[in-house]
Length: 202
Ligand SMILES: N[C@@H](CCC(=O)N[C@@H](CS)C(=O)NCC(=O)O)C(=O)O
Image 1 (cartoon, rainbow, N blue to C red):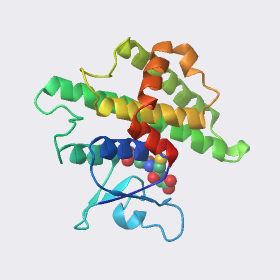
Image 2: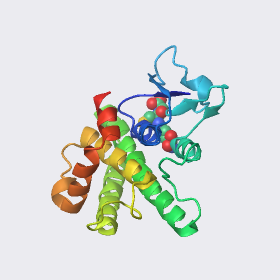
Image 3: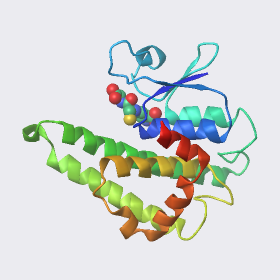
């Protein structure tokens, strides 16, 4: 299978982490969707990454669908609980929180890229505040636990680390480590994982 993406997209990082943690053989192709000649629109009519192309040509998007599909491919590491409905919901809810942080951070980033006179300061503030509230909530939920949900790594951890790496990239001035030392400690541990390091290396 082939994964189309870019190294800065947090949704792509989440997907790469899932494939790496599950040891699923794949080829990762850097394919910015707005560049001429990009394969992305053929794989995903929405023109968004990540897009996963299976060996038979089937295209899978978006990142949540890819994660859910990939998780069923083997049992080496189960990233989304299968039989416990509440645990499953909690993992997906963590994912929704992390994805929401990504969504808001992308909105802020897009505003910053617009000419100053056409930037929407209200939207920027609303989305910055949403990220701040989400981080406070996450920090409270995490406490001193090693993993977001349960006793082992899950999609929740992979989504959250992807969101935080993106915040470091786009909102470097945000001192979320100072505000939430428990989250900082969790992040430092997660950053040591081979999968996370691999995505940071390119
Ligand atoms: N909900 C989607 C979001 C994907 C998304 O918005 N990706 C961005 C990159 S971060 C994208 O491809 N934007 C289109 C563009 O850059 O033209 C997912 O989880 O996969």
